[in-house]
Amino acid sequence: EDVHLVIWNRWGDIIFESFDIDRGWDGTYKNQPLPNDIYVYLIEVEGYNYRGTIYNELLKGDITILR
Image 1: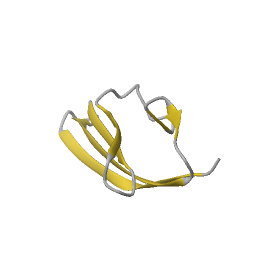
Image 2 (image 1 turned 30 degrees about the vertical axis):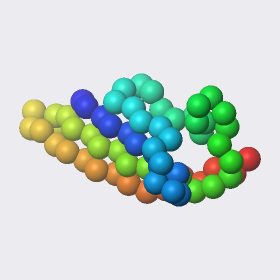
Image 3 (image 1 turned 90 degrees about the vertical axis):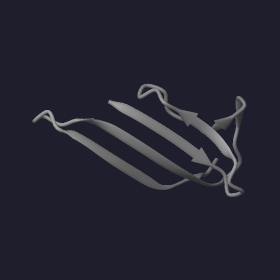
């Protein structure tokens, strides 16, 4: 499967991006914890289902950090 994860802050700056299915976001930016806020994510996944046909999935939403 291919995966693409992008997370933005409220001003539209990309604060995290990954193409590795095993690498998730830990709520930091440049190794510093981010402040309480709402962050927007987009996850694109492409792979094969159990029948061997290709599927594409697009997931989007927001994450709220409360510390």
